[in-house]
Image (cartoon, rainbow, N blue to C red; front, side, top):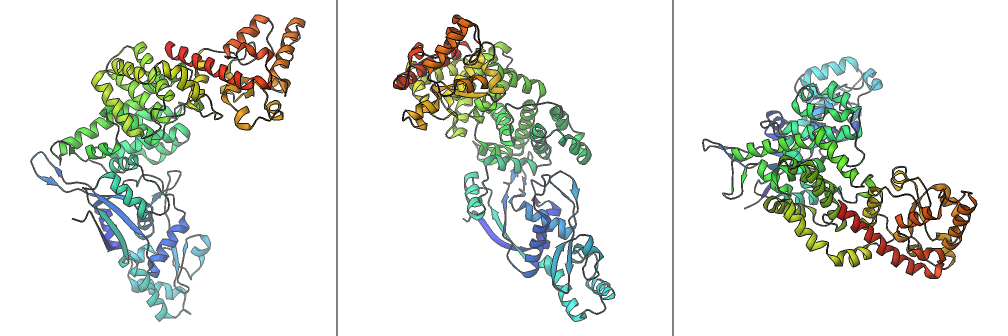
Length: 596
């Protein structure tokens, strides 16, 4: 049995399906991103009889109602939204939302003498040769005869027979065929995605989260369309505070809902650490509320899928929308959100660049909400969430097939409880071999996007460690202010002695230091600049460093995990120095993890 059908439909049939709701346009509330000139080109292609690409719909499954009747599934548009919006704007005359979420009209003008289309502007409006707006003619709001008479009155010199022929052709736009690929409801998301990518050669990637967003946006019965807006608008408010005014001015219906009330705090709130996008918000709500990780399951549940009976039931759909709504409300809740951000920062993860995995954050927030919902004391929640977050960063837990890992982890936590499962994960992944060998090897890297190195910096922030050769400046302040990363063995010095960038840019050769110190050290050897620091302490002249005692110097090197051999080290000792420092850095990370 064919899992999809390909057919042609005239523009007017397509538009009537949209008016009647037979095709649900999921993203109609999202901004129309096409330039007006692209709308003109689409109309011109239809006029010339050129193909305009395929529209792809995916039929929702028929759902069993409580009384046993079947309710026919709507078609959901999964590709072609911009083209459909362009047609409804130019042909039907519907207003569309622009990128500032303002409603605008797009009027296409037509010149019957040259058979050219243009976006209406003042010049065309004043010219008698141009018909200002094509939609009343295509839409039967005025007859062909009226249109011809009106045009000939303004252009008496025109060839009437030609004008008749051209206006008839213009009216024929609504009978022009558009290709529709209708996918069967029995297809799974992966197959639908594959079909989408093969047809859509523009390199657009469709994620399973996009299917969820399309699914909820096309639902008005369970307020899915409002949930969709809540997610979209929350993510927009995170990065654009002025957007709140657009909601209040242009979407008053939404502004009066509980969904808006739950997110409006973000209009004055801030978050430069987590900054989730719509996929992250969905991920957290779904993982926390449904204890699942695969978005394809969420699409099935929102369709009413009964996994055991293999049927689609209205009660399951209702329950799933209710759970998703509750999950989203908890994710955007001001208290929960802000406490979670504080929790991350209190673990020393004070800056986005220290957190290499967004999914580690997503899972940790879902876990935080889950444990709060279970009524666990806040101090215990903090302990488990911090440990889970750092563990998942250290072992790159969600760097591969994240959905499968998230699915496994949340189900295991559900079954065994966080205490037992975390202990099991620690035994499996953080044994002695990890701390003494695997972690040390991870630190053998010249990439500062290295998980182990970022966790090391978090440990330094957590311990309030001082910057290298500085008495009072903290590493955390320098990270927040984008301070200088300094080479302990200066790179010019190592380069002069035949070391390659991959060698002198090892993370174990990096420390955070104040810019003034970095400049003064220049390309001196560690042996030389540390001798100078000691002299300056004796003479109470603080030039290279602000340290004012030998004890202070010893402590500073200890806090920065620098081996004592540094005092006499030259380029010959560089590789031994790196090996020793990596071991000290790994030991620092372990001590930090044990304290969480």
